[in-house]
Amino acid sequence: MDRRTIGASALAVGAVGLGCMPMSWAYTSSQQRGEESLRAVHAALDAGVSLLDTADMYGPFTNELLLGRVLKERRAEVFAATKCGLLVGDGHIVANGRPGYVRRACDASLRRLQTDVIDLYQLHRTDPDIPVEETWGAMAELVRAGKVRALGLCALDVRAPRRPVVPGRSGAVAAARAASAAGAHADRTGAVRSRPGRSGGRAGAFGGRAGAQGGRGPDAYDGTIRLLERVQQVFPVAAVQAELSVWSPEALEKLLPWCAQRGVGFLAARPLGSGYLTGTLTPGGGFEPDDPRARHPRFTAEMMAANQPLVAGLRRVAERHGGPAAGITPARVALAWALAQGGQVVPVPGTKRARWAVENAGAAALALTPADLAEIAALPPARGSWD
Image 1 (spheres, helix red, strand yellow):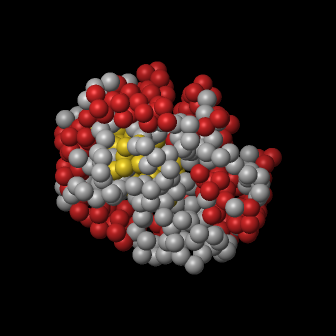
Image 2: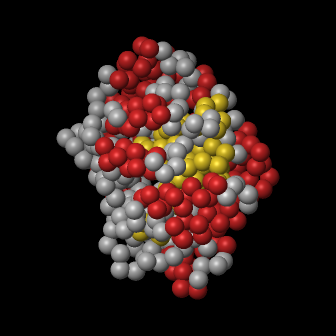
Image 3: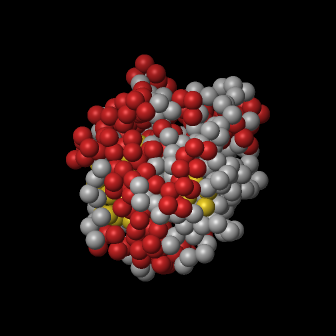
């Protein structure tokens, strides 16, 4: 697989990464099987993927523990990217940007990942109660201490709405809260610290999108850019993670150019539109109750049907490159489109299945033509609210 670089220090990663969240969080918990997820990670590494993207809140903690089993065996092949800044509470998720928490969270992630250094440590969300410079300064100290190689910022949500915790996770939440009360010294819970009485900092799985066609508009990332300018004064940003896909291209307007001008890597989150752009989802097919798409406006039967022209367009491009017989699917075209948006773009599709991990990795070998890109650009914008 071709390599791409992240940040001024030119950290090299495979052109396509692997988002590990679905293995432990947010999607269809009945299908979250550790051994199957391990096979997916190993298959991705075998296919040339190196960037594994996780977070301490996924599970919480179980996703990092899962990847720790992989890193123990194949550390030299892995670019480990994890996140701090969000705590799973009783029915909600709360931001925590206190420097002391950041330091404890990093140490706990290192233990769970079974590694001496985190390649990319990302701030999952900013804390409205703590100046971001304080949080970022604590993260910079971790770089100077040799615990972290580079820092990244997630910009997945313009607003940060409160979201319900996925049903069935009350045991994990209770464990986190108990560890907090006990001082949070255990490995599984070392990063957790409850902050009762807070009013801000809630974060959603999909994020707050608005606009006539469900997009966020050209100014959606203005606040993110101002935030990036602030933290750049403290310590360099190596990478920004934000949503970028055929049906959610808003980052192309300002955020991606900002990154390109400064040599900042761009991790394209949800490059497959949370599965929609793969063409494998049937409108009206339904989702399991704990899958957030079951409650998402773009995943109603009506909106999934209305947005089929996007999938049809990707399928036409795939057919020109040989189609399924050549292993070219709408998913690969969607990922190749993301790769074509700039040399610093690394799409991070999430999956828990080895088959899809290998298919996604294969997108790095698909070169779209100018005609392909023009056809995709001419597709109608996605319909439906992104709230």
